[in-house]
Length: 250
Image (tube, rainbow, N blue to C red; front, side, top):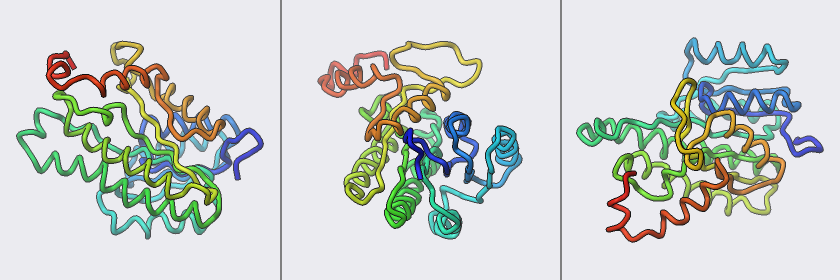
């Protein structure tokens, strides 16, 4: 169960090597989370992440999970929920792809869409049902501001996030009143270590997303924008006429 401050004691990270997923886990461990399940493809990076989180004081269990194999999701995640309540399930896996390459290699585009959307649908439904059955818990879904309107520069990725965002909102409505809930997180461009600083209105970092997720959990929020001002920017962008939008350097 969440503690008196609205923060989880147990966390499941789907996408166990995700920068945002690990930043969130570190932040929540510092705030009392004591059990973390890291779900991802077995690899040295997953084991290293588990060791680093364990050194912070949490019990960390790794779970073999492949977003591209929805048929295996029940076998992978079922035992996690059977072992005890999960307060927060963070759906953090996804790939950005390469727009120029993917336009000329449709199979790569399809694989990216399958990871970001169909894999998330399978895992999301399973987690939602499990949280509903236990009567509490939050499914945090990492969407993207890119899903709010298709841009020439990344419309393949953006379309996959648009589908994920719509799915997550619908799942949240389906779970309303059951004790379980969905929180949709829409970051701008996430800058990794060493990346040049971009427009502060449009960019963020894994640590800032993690901080926003923590605050959203405390507030029982349904939607979180990172940075917060991005909500107004994207509201304006969504309503621009297409001829004008095409002329923007985005």
